[in-house]
Length: 148
Image (tube, rainbow, N blue to C red):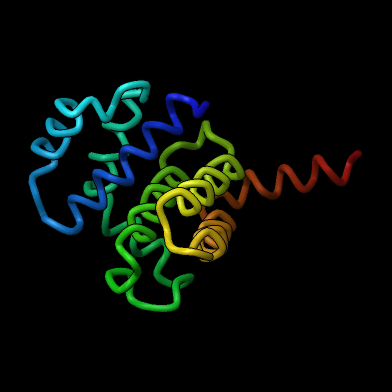
């Protein structure tokens, strides 16, 4: 049984994929998801935050990952691109969520929706982005572990 937040991420991946592929207005896609009951059991506020936040911060998100991907961001498989964009957005904006949780959620999304092996690519990119975006959190964790 997945959590309401995990379900929100799953819906956000599907909605962002649809947006990337069709360019359809965000509110139209969001309305379709609500009407189709796809947001049932999802934390709707988190879905809305991700789904509207990623396009709003798209330039910053793509810039944050461009040095860690092996091709232009727009050339990344659209499913992986949606997953990576959500993960990078969360690393940048959801500081209350531990970076390891965000990376793990991205890996699980890639296993669920991505091509075979895409979870390794997602893991590698998000880990590298986390080293920059969550530098202080990672250093604090290392210090804490060294003190044990």
